[in-house]
Image (spheres, rainbow, N blue to C red):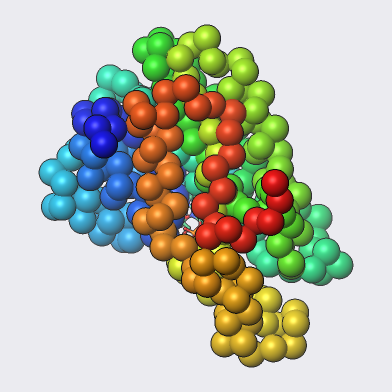
Amino acid sequence: METGLKNRVAIVAASSQGIGRATALALAAEGAHLAMCARGAAALHETAEEVRRLYGVEVYTDTFDVSQDDRVRNFADAVHRHYGRIDVCVTNAGGPPAKSFAETTMEEWDRAYQLNLRSTVSFAHAVLPHMQQQHWGRLIAITSIAVKQPVLELVLSNSVRVGVLGLVRSLATQYGPDNITINNVAPGYTATARVKDLAEAGARASGRSVQEYESQMTADIPMRRLALPEEVADAVVWLASERASYVTGQTIVVDGGAYRGL
Ligand code: NAD
């Protein structure tokens, strides 16, 4: 399948590990030049070096917390100065802590909003004007199956991420005339560091061992296994590609069938 991504410029946020890292590698495999960010310099530079070595594309990096909107804006502007364009922007961040509602503090609610909703708004603000000028763009938000089906002990994620859906749907309507598609990829349980944290929290909350909890996680998934980060990345690549040119405002759930709704 010809994706049309060769020599496109793609921002991938929070891309030193996990789903973000797999997405960066998958876009680079299609020949896209990258701009990557994360908080920790060592892991980010290691991933960026791997991308360059494997695919020979250009990689621009910066280290910052995506909840700092001034840093997001400066990053996007620097990427545009560096490459002269921004074609694709994949928004991503860590997930909020797994806790029962009673355990959550108001500070954690504020932080979850900043991390998962406000950071998406910041990236959208920063990249959409550039995409409008080009009359071409792809904004893809990484959220969670929690936007379709609440996950036990993830009340922060279940609540805050739904706002991203509202944003995606609103922006898809507004920016369609600019030939910019705006979509959301919602992973189910995916084999990354994050899922280990979730299994530990779930085990604590349910009084089971981590191993028992992990077995239950996969037993509830029709495909009987976790997603690989690369499988989530493939959905992002498709949405970023020319092959998805008429798909906008949608949520693509990549969850092995775990979401039971119609
Ligand atoms: P991960 O913990 O493996 O990786 C998270 C990445 O985000 C890392 O590169 C980290 O450095 C970066 N990061 C975290 N907080 C950041 C911040 N404030 N600013 C900049 N970078 C930051 O997680 P993952 O499994 O790849 O998950 C990615 C997203 O997908 C998260 O929001 C997660 O909640 C969501 N998600 C994950 C799963 C799963 O099972 N793994 C399921 C559904 C949704």
